Amino acid sequence: MNNRYLFSIILVVFIDLLGFSLIIPLLPYYAQTFNASDTVIGLLLASYAAAQLIGAPLLGRASDRFGRRPILLISIFGTFLGFLLFGFAESLTMLFASRILQGLTGGNLSVAQAYITDVTDAKSRNRGLGMIGAAFGLGFIIGPAVGGLLSNISYSVPAFVASGLSFINLLLIAFWLPESLTVDRRAQLTQRKPALSFSALLQALKHPLTGPLLITRFLYSLAFVILQSIFSLFALKRFNMSVVATGFVLTYVGVISVITQAWLVGKLSQRFRDTILIESGLLLLALGLLVWAFAPNIPILVFSVTPIALAGGMLNTIVPSALTKTVEPQEVGGILGLSTSVESATRVVSPLLGGFLLERISYWAPGVLGAVLLFISFAYVLRTVEDAGGPLTP
Image (cartoon, rainbow, N blue to C red; front, side):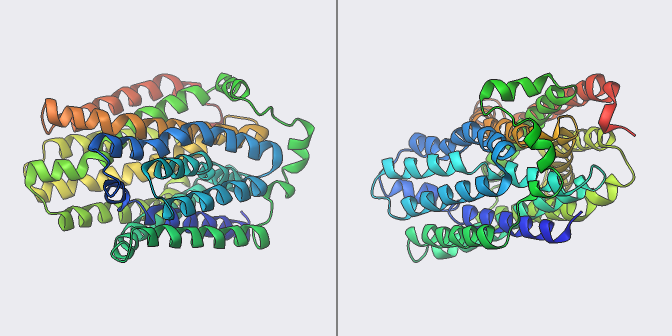
């Protein structure tokens, strides 16, 4: 594993996510200044994920064909323009245009993951992707707090700071980040450049294990994002927790997730095969969601999010890593883009589903549904991925 390449791409991801997360706290408040209803605000929040659903697989596939570095430059430039548009917004239309542009070009995490795949071997890949996940999580821990402080000056200020960070990232990629495919993959990829189309992407699903792993990604992401999207509302309705207390709990979740991806995943990967780690993560997440659903008090609630954060960090690292081992080298970016697209789809569906269950059934319903989905996913992995063996088992 090339440490210089690894450090460079981790820095790029951290700066990118730091800029992105700066504007998260102010989105609903900024939209309200244009008299947006709750429904419109919900659509605004969902528009990013919906656009990423389309953009991520295309960016990943394009990076397979044209190289990681040029696609990173294009995507970060799109993000830079999106933040500027957000800062100068004078209407809801401009806000929507900003979020959609950022979503279409914001699938660069899959390109960064493909970059890691290029510069690591199968043995060290889990650790490398874990470091990317840690940089991602660290950006989300720092960004919202800084963005909230900057919004006291103006709602535009965090957006302009984010655009400045994107510009720094452009310079970093242009003058510091090497093209990973020129090292040892270029010869392989130039022999058969992958087609840049959705039909070509869907062809990748015919590879053994790829489809089952993507289905597993969808099921656990659906369960995990339900918790993410309604946790604050759950804490308020069930325990009357303050905004500050809820923020501390969510920060704790972020810290545990970062530690898991930066350190624990690498250690576990040295001792256990990918299938064991995926199965363990699914069971741990299911049990954590059940404890969360029926937590009788705040201490038990805080206890429940520890296994949830651990399992989420494991799965978000191991499953993408496993996917890269099931396809040809020239298809890595495309399949990671599909994986990001699958996760984005859950971010459109889960908030609506979680809110409906919380309002219409009971406080425990979202956690129970999530646990059921994870037990189904665990059984599915045992039946398909584990039995197939292949590159995921010794």
